[in-house]
Length: 252
Ligand SMILES: NC(=O)c1ccc[n+]([C@@H]2O[C@H](COP(=O)([O-])OP(=O)(O)OC[C@H]3O[C@@H](n4cnc5c(N)ncnc54)[C@H](OP(=O)(O)O)[C@@H]3O)[C@@H](O)[C@H]2O)c1
Image (tube, rainbow, N blue to C red; front, side, top):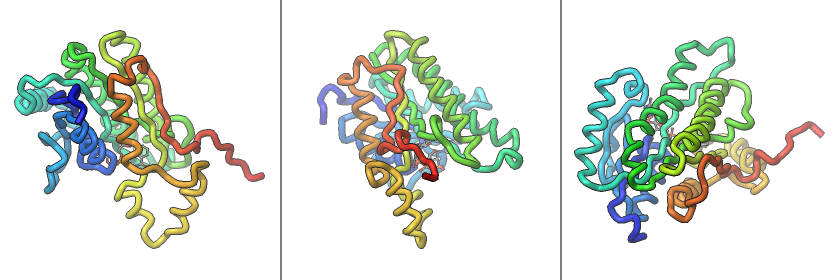
């Protein structure tokens, strides 16, 4: 445990997801008091100091929900200082342009952009007082995407923009960065390839590094970006992408 982190609060959304759980575990091991937000209460809560139910679409649409959520966090953390906010939860709606509904785009922006913005507002004073930082979990799809990813890629690109705008607007008080992974081996991703191992091998092989990311590699980078060792890094997007964004894909 890093003693400087002892009892400092890290609020992490999407805490029951593949990357979210790994983030919670790593920040907890590093000494943070971890508050995870989830939609459905997980059976196993050993990786959190507190778990709070929060639907991010509801947070955006219902002012009462915002008040209740803030109260729940304040009750859970007591006097501990809030040092880190990680906007990790995301919605990924896939569909061709002609098939996407405007409501698909709206919910994508609510969950992936507006909720992170609101959470930054809610905890701005705390983070500012404690020289804290915000980490938005972005994606390589903000730079290079593929068919059917319009809702996800567009909203995540806005999230990358939010990072830069907040970093400028919050100036010297709060550092704000994006960590943008490429394909990461979460249980859900692996489950999607059961029975189709050759497709997983192809996915691994198309990354110059020869494989996809491990969740621990994402958490380790997040820990660094939120630490005082990263004190001059703000407004940045760090691509943990195994080199895939540097690779030219052409038929030759
Ligand atoms: N895994 C990858 O290959 C990869 C690559 C690049 C970027 N990322 C990014 O990494 C982050 C974590 O992704 P993951 O792979 O760990 O995915 P995941 O396992 O599906 O986790 C996503 C989390 O977001 C939560 N969430 C979705 N909609 C929500 C809503 N309306 N309100 C509140 N929470 C909501 C989910 O809650 P429920 O558990 O209740 O559904 C889930 O816990 C995301 O920002 C994603 O864009 C992942």
